[in-house]
Length: 297
Image 1 (cartoon, one colour):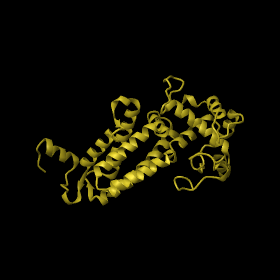
Image 2 (cartoon, rainbow, N blue to C red):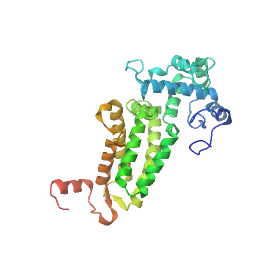
Image 3 (cartoon, rainbow, N blue to C red):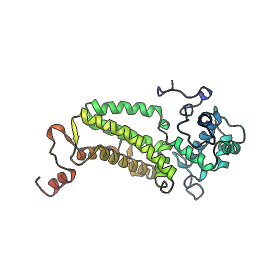
Image 4 (spheres, rainbow, N blue to C red):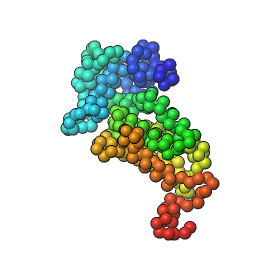
């Protein structure tokens, strides 16, 4: 068992670091093999893992964190992922990844055309397993406090801080945010981003539903769980992007373990939700009009 208590991948690559040691047959969908068996086998090949590691190293170098690379037309957005550059990175792979052989030939054997490699690398980069195991463990602790703990406000701030601070430092999050601006017109990238959000928001909606039930809350009339999840997700994406692009904006306060996202999350919660035993039955618009226009409903 690995650090996440999930099933480990094929025996031949169990010495590789997480998540390269996992079964990647459901992640790499564009491998150049005719049969399902051949594609699954190649997805879990050590050289395939090494080529992915080379691609991920290039993404980290050029998208961050800590990349320090100047923006230029060659590397905007994925220009750094040419066959030549991936092959060069492959030759410099750290142990225990494979690094010997003709990297360009190995790439062409597995992905033809090269755009299929880029698509599979994106799929791998935004795969949920690329979130660090310790992040998920801490998130589980904060969620327990969010559902049952005595200090709901502190729990919101903690989970918002963790989510924003970790997101700033995760190449998968950085890539996802960058791709969202470039996905239009590329059906495969759009599909990947859409699938990521479906999975991501699905897990959060389950949490929000549990919080509502355990905290005896309800959504205001006219609002849905999808509205709540989308509002908080959009705010989180914007906050993470601002923290990456403008560190001086103080969106994240590491000393206080807080973030502006926590404040925004509390504002959305206060606006969207009502106590079960004191629900006024007003829509959000009606509640705002009653406060600012003095209207009576």
